[in-house]
Length: 551
Ligand SMILES: Cc1cc2nc3c(=O)[nH]c(=O)nc-3n(C[C@H](O)[C@H](O)[C@H](O)COP(=O)(O)OP(=O)(O)OC[C@H]3O[C@@H](n4cnc5c(N)ncnc54)[C@H](O)[C@@H]3O)c2cc1C
Ligand code: SF4
Image (cartoon, rainbow, N blue to C red; front, side, top):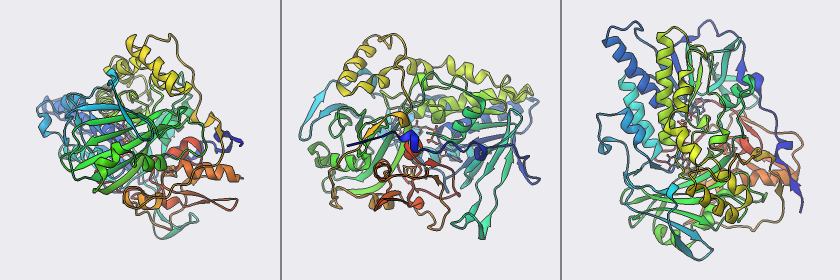
């Protein structure tokens, strides 16, 4: 047995590629507000802003028309969206006060709920912790919500540019001036091919970065502007499957315990999505200690447990996908979320409450606040950090920060393992987050050492359990085979690290062949797990990656 410290093998963030001081090209497209990412955060921002502008115009205001653009890397809206999801409808209600929950793109109300502690063969029902109550909420597919939000935005005149990944922020002095998109059609060695298209520059008075979990632009901007947070951001990887099933699932189910080792933080979910579908997944904190831990494989083993097997038996896997979740909570929030000409919203900031596994309504709410701040700044003619500062004030005074403060040390308590963490989390709930006093200090996931050792091989049956290549097929991934690699791999990756990467990546992108690391970039589903623990992820040509339909 030996040990791996992932950070040693990781290349630095390519800041000179992500923050560009080049002047925008002569044919740059001019917008007023640009939003990077068509997730719930970006689309809620676009909708709220378009409405504010219309209201201002109707009242004879001075702002006139605004050109609002949303850039999304997926070829079509929703194709890169993945969540659980149980949705707290609070932000939907605020954004669409004239609509009823039955008008929203939800699948069904939460019927009942149950939490189980699993051992390999048994499931012991335990009382639902107060942070995990979901009564009054709805189950939904994030892909469907995003497509619906996109329709609302388009109806308000927002320009949606799907298939346009943003490669870099264009800056001047200390201000963000706009963005540059990725080129497309390049040959594998990065040279222009016969059908290649150069990058496009877009300028804006305000850029809203809504790029989701482990955002590259957000990481780069914070490093460039030296914006710290009390603790580093932590991440979990969630691997999820959507199943067509024979009998409806009568409750929202969460589990703790098996198949996770006691020193890993995480759990599973199984949600009903109407009478004949269920979503299930396993979420594991990326600060686990065993180098051979493989979240995709653990999910496959988990489906063999009677609790899941009896629900899935006779059914069919429809879709598979994976994504990271920012888990650091309150103490991992950057001290500011605005800069000159730029605002950050949703998961890229880390607005996720881990004990309740909720981020969608926080993402939307932060998007609405950003819209209000951008509108006010443009009206005042001051899109500087000072002019946009009302966003940070709205966030600080909001239920987003209130909720996250209440659970501020809960995830952090689990660095001591499941049992100690469970006791501490109970005390934190009872004291409204006041126990244990100050902040529990954490380190980057990549700074947690991993112990290597033999792993137990798992053979999927192709019926209930699946290997990674079959899984990637079920993500709809149809990335061009000849695409240049978008993954920045460190040099001299030794065999044990190659094995570690092959376990971390749920999509089979990394493989140890002999003593070498083989990388298959087209398989990547943009989950960003190795960006946290190994090779860096960078944006690649539009339309690459998964094509989720109902994740
Ligand atoms: C397994 C799992 C289960 C979850 N369960 C729940 C749940 O039950 N309830 C809940 O409320 N929350 C849940 N969450 C969290 C929730 O999904 C997120 O908090 C929420 O989706 C964040 O919204 P967002 O708009 O900030 O980011 P996202 O939804 O990630 O959207 C970001 C968008 O930006 C695009 N993008 C990224 N980079 C670029 C770029 N460079 N250029 C252009 N576009 C780009 C992406 O393709 C994506 O469409 C879960 C998350 C996971 C992974
Ligand atoms: S290579 Fe892609 S799919 Fe694999 S872990 Fe990294 S981001 Fe996820």
